[in-house]
Image (tube, rainbow, N blue to C red; front, side, top):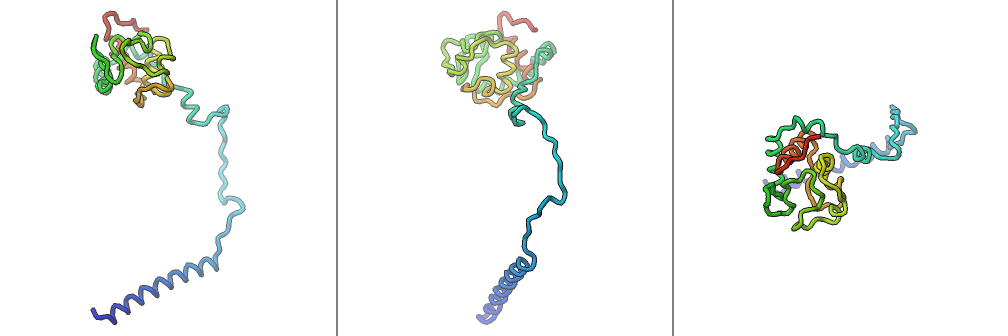
Length: 181
């Protein structure tokens, strides 16, 4: 291609760009943007009363659904399969060593923060009480919300059936299992 043809093509592209810019500017002049005084299609939304809580806080207040009725029919094998996720940080063997988290053998109805050779967070130590079925259910649902300040970095088990299965399985890890409610 010789220099003259290249100049013709470049001039055509530049002129096309200038015409486009001029057309846009002319459109803005002839049809200026106007704000509407009111919406053309008004929507009426009924406000739900939530006593000053936003929807995220309202959901948090509800917490986990109860699982006590589910424990009797819980699938222990499914609970054991779910515990595979936990073995990255915990052991379930009697007399087993602590890992990142404490040994969970005989956890049901054991006092909170009671493994002697494990350093618990201050929040969990101050929490007190025992690991009842309800306490385990709430903690496994969302650990950081149940005990604010805990070191346990796990999002939690959202399904009630999963929580019931794993708690029922952990109940069996004892020489004297806690009776079902």
